[in-house]
Image 1 (tube, rainbow, N blue to C red):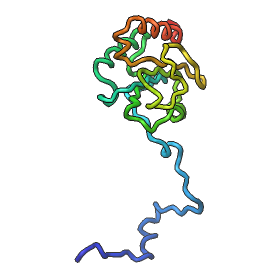
Image 2 (cartoon, rainbow, N blue to C red; image 1 turned 135 degrees about the vertical axis):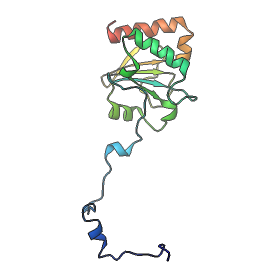
Image 3 (tube, helix red, strand yellow; image 1 turned 180 degrees about the vertical axis):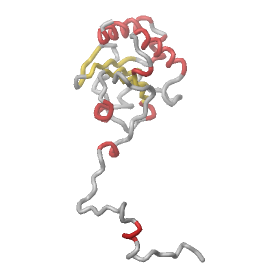
Image 4 (tube, helix red, strand yellow; image 1 turned 90 degrees about the vertical axis):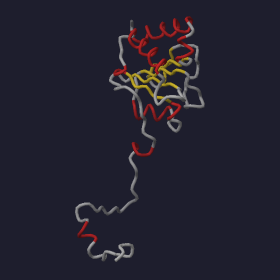
Length: 166
């Protein structure tokens, strides 16, 4: 006997699901959290500091850049647990506003992220501090570029000292 043609009588269905069926009089509206793509990041994000990167070869960040970033964070008396590292290369449907709405960052540091990756209101890569929606933002060249350029590292350090009062 095949179960492909088996049908449950309509009178039995409400009894089977009496505790789990829901009758909606109106159209169901998805909560905001289900409407946009969920944001996946590395770190515990305990201090609401978001680091945006663009690395097509790694899930979050390649080992060399992660070591360089860890050095920057330790100079600021921070750890990976304090931040959230978000690789924009793999999160292409997420907008700047999605990030603000879902993560509520205090600071955003962007390394090598372009307008093609995200709709950033700040694309100036001159390593200056900008403020958008009460969030301190720094847009910088990629971590690989920074690690090889002493002048850009100094400019980043000046910005970080101002933000973290170091």
